[in-house]
Image (cartoon, rainbow, N blue to C red; front, side, top):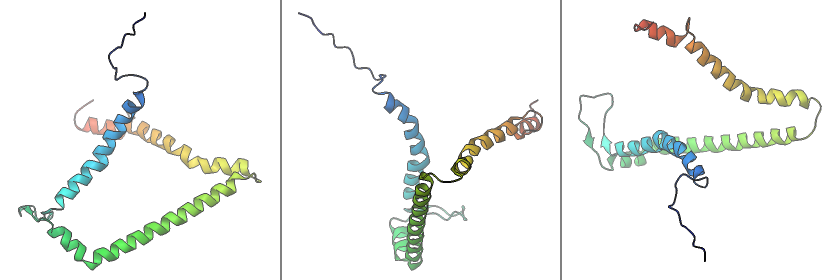
Length: 153
């Protein structure tokens, strides 16, 4: 009779690799979106006048929320924002779908037009790379100038 040896569970396996690779994205999302959102919601319960740092920060409770929800200017701005957002989404989706359907068929000049439409996507990384190259340039780059200004040679 053969006995099967059960090994300890490993966390660094090929099956778990997808989760390990998602961890940086999770932490960046947490740092960029979730933490500021929670901080802003927390601040909404306090009376804090940013332009008057000499005044103390005091607890307002739901007073700020009641004030904003009773203000008609807020509701007008919210309605305008939602209308604009809906219109822009519908227009952009319709235009994008229409252009995609037109470009999906064979047509005269497709060999010229299709690469021209992809050109902005290809140029962005090139321009960013050139900008960093100029920033790091030892003779006239901004980073070299800053380092020379503060005393590094």
